[in-house]
Structure formats: C-alpha cells, structure tokens
Length: 109
Image 1 (cartoon, rainbow, N blue to C red):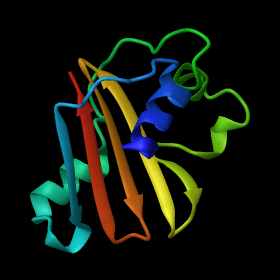
Image 2 (tube, helix red, strand yellow; image 1 turned 90 degrees about the vertical axis):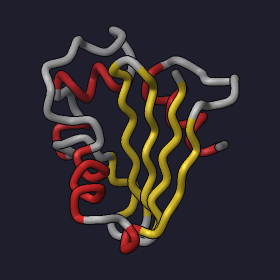
Image 3 (spheres, one colour; image 1 turned 45 degrees about the vertical axis):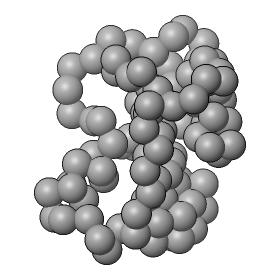
Image 4 (cartoon, rainbow, N blue to C red; image 1 turned 180 degrees about the horizontal axis):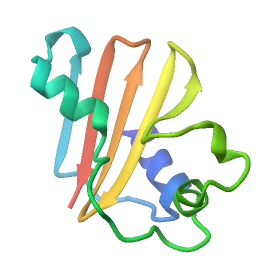
C-alpha cells in the first residue's frame, strides 16, 4: 500500500489517502497468458486525455527529458528488480512488479 500510494502521489500529484477498491498480488507465473498480456500492457493502448499539466505523468507523456529513455507504460527503477506503472484513466491504477516475480495491482475509484 505504501509503495502504491507513493507512486500515485509522485506520478499524478494526486495523493490517495483513502482505502483502495482493489488490492491484488500474485506471482507472475500464476497469471494466464491473457492476464499476463493485460497486466503487461498496464492500461496502454487506448486514446486518452492528457495527465495533469506539470505532473510527472504529463512530462513522461510529452517525452520530456529525462523521460525519453523509458517508452511504454512501465517505469523501470532497477531492471529485473523493480518496475511500476501508474494509470489515471477513470480509476487510478498502480501496478508493481518486484524481482520479475510478484505482480501487484492497487486501484482507487
């Protein structure tokens, strides 16, 4: 929870202090192929509105430096160790992968 709240606040400038609607975690190897594709897409692919101006999500969407080097929906903190994605399309969704083993998903409506 602490990681998800921090990522939402940091990326969207929208702290999530209330309880989330969904908290899920599962080993990546336990996801079906369809679930894995959905999880790895991390909400990408549809036409969306722009994030709040000035937020890190906005700077990333614009391709502003230093964010050019991280294409796609995932922010790779340490390759093979930790990555996360934050999506604000309707609900706020934070997805985290630890050690390419544990998949986590936290959703606020």
